[in-house]
Length: 310
Ligand code: COA
Ligand code: MG
Image 1: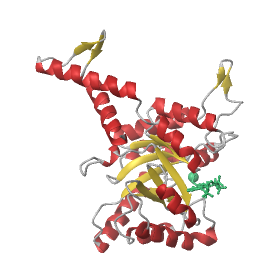
Image 2: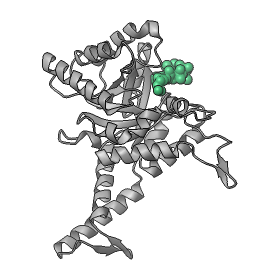
Image 3: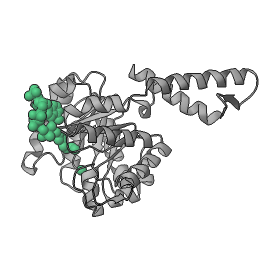
Image 4: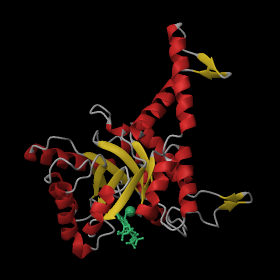
């Protein structure tokens, strides 16, 4: 990645969750193949351990070599007494932290508030690099206002679907985190109960130039279910997917890797469009199909992603 690559273009096929009360897992996550890692201060940390988890995350930002990964920390929500302490401690820990992930975002004003506080802390500490925001959409309110939330701060890089909390907030009858439900089916087979939420999140993220990231698949021993879930999300436009176990990461990297045939085809599209441009035409035919400006954008995005993955 070059210094000028916009944040939304970063490779983000897999994002591994690591509870910040288990620092023995940090070096394993750093050495593993996940494109992004998030240290969690929120729901994997019991109330009594919040301060210790925060201190662990601060030390991890300073002391561990995270290579070229996207390093994120999921802070506690703004409805808790921990949010401001989390943000201050993390932004005072130096420049390596890429993204603050905010859970349960329900209103664009929360994003504005986080941006304001981050701007203050950065001004006070002389942080060299603006921290990004990753927003977890996992409540009915958040999903209902996702478009406004997506555009509330120029710091925002990605939207993440929080499936377990969303199911609770919507009153969904789920049997497995991110999985299917035998009750939600047509005579032709099982339907995907996450389709609407994911489609809505992807639409809002793409419209705002952000990376849409699908939520985790909780049953980490079900490789087939994970792959099917990742393929569905990819087919709909997701950039990547959260992992709750390192055993899920390789499958996600493979699922969200642009495939060679698609990349080769994208290069052919660009070549045909370039040839057309030299002849003064903006619409050309390739293999009996119309190509136009929109085809170039898709093809360019595909080639750029393949180059980053290589
Ligand atoms: N990050 C890095 N390494 C991890 C890891 C993680 N999130 N989860 C497990 N590992 C390591 C284990 O330490 C173990 O390493 P070893 O082979 O050196 O002993 C190996 O991967 C296999 O782990 P396993 O024994 O199968 O898992 P576990 O029982 O230790 O933990 C979970 C299972 C689900 C509790 C754990 O993966 C986890 O906490 N995941 C994240 C949950 C989370 O953050 N949820 C909130 C966000 S959605
Ligand atoms: Mg959640």
